[in-house]
Amino acid sequence: MSHTPRTATVAGCTVLALALGVSLTSCGADGNPLSAAPYDAADQISYNAPTGDRKKADPDQPLEVVAEGSDGRITDVTAIDAAGRYVAGELAADGGRWHSTSPLAADTRYTVRVSTEDEDGAPGRKVLTFLTGKPTTKKRLDVTFGPKAGTYGVGQPLTAKLSKPVKDPAQRAVVERALKVDSTPATEGAWHWVDDKELHYRPKDYWPTNATVQVRSNLEGIKISDRLWGGRAKPLKITTGDRLIAVTDAASHSMTVYKNGEAIKTIPVTTGKPGFDTRNGVKVVLGKERFVRMRSTTIGIAEGSSEAYDLPVYFATRVTWSGEYVHAAPWSVGSQGYANVSHGCTGMSTANAEWFFDTVREGDLVQVVNSGGNTMEPFGNGFGDWNLPWDKWRTGSALVAGDPAGPGPEEAARLRPAAV
Image (cartoon, rainbow, N blue to C red; front, side, top):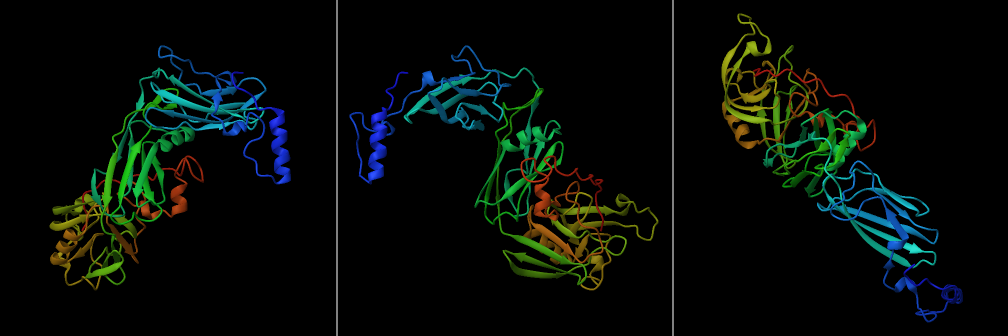
C-alpha cells in the first residue's frame, strides 16, 4: 500500500498507557495515526462505474464499492449528484462492500466519497466521480403540483398529479420518496395515493397559521421502472392565513365561525331537509361565486315536481363539486335558525352570506355536525381529506405503515352544478 501502517509497538504502548491511567499525547516515533491526515485509499477499493467523461455508467445498475484485499475495510460511503440528491445505500457488516439501494438518475454526474481504514485502524479517503448515461426509453413521468401559488386557509391539501399511472407499490415508493414537502413552521404530514395518477398531501392536523409551504420533486432522471423515468416538475410555494373554521350544527340550525380558535360570529342557517340532508364532516372551501343560477334538474329533480326550482343565487361559497354551497337564501329567512328546508346547501340571509363570502378564502374549513346526511367523501367531490383519521390517511402512503399500495381510491362523485 502507499500509506505507512501503524506499528504493533505503537498499539501495545497505547493499550498499556490506557491500562495504567497515564495521560498520553504521543507514543513512539510515529505518533497516533488516527490524528494524521487520511491516506489515499485508491488501492484499497474498487467500484463498478467507468471513469472519464467519455464513458458513462448504466443508470439501470446499482452503484457498488468493494474493499480490495484482506487488510482494510470500508467505513462509510456518501454518493451525491450535481443537484444535491443523495443516493441511499447499504454497507455490509464486515465493511467489504457497499451498494446503492435507491435508483441512480440518468444523464447525471455523481461524486462518491469513500472512507476506509486499514488493519491497524488508520483512516483512508478517496473521492470518485462518474457520469450516468441517458435512459434508453423516452417515457417520462411528469408531476404537476396544486393548488396554484397563493395564500390559502389552513385546510388546503397539496396535490400531485402524475402524467402516467403508477400502480406497483415499489414504483409508488420511488415516486413518493422524490416528492418533498417543507413547511415553516415545520409540521408532520404524509402523502396519500388517491388513485394511480394523483396524490394528496396533508398534515396530521391542519397547517399552522401564517405558514410557508413548499413542495418540489426530485424525480427528474430517476428510474421508476424499466420503461418509465422521472420527468420535470415545477416547484410550488403557498402560504396560509388565519385558522378559520365554520361549524354548522344542523340540529340547532346555526353556524359559528371561529378565527384562530375564537368565535367571531354566529349565524342562523337552514340546511338540507330529510331526503336532501347536508353531508356531515369537514369540507374545504373550493371557490367563491358571486352569482350562480341553480336549477333542480341538475340534481335529478324533474321539471313540474313539487321540489323543482330555478333560482338566482348570490354570494355562493362552494364546498363540493357536486353543488353544495354556503349561500344567500332570502326565500327561507323565516326558517333560518328554526328548520332545515334546503336541498342540501347551507342557506342564510343575504347580509350574512355576503359577510361569509368576504371573510373566507379557498382552503378554509366548513364542518357540518348533527345532520342526517352521510359523511363527506374523502376524495372525488372536493377535499374531504380531513374526514380520514390520521392512521387511515397514513395507510395510503407507499412509505409508511400499512399496505404500501394504500386503500383503493374512492369512487369519484358525479359532477353536478348545484343544489339549494
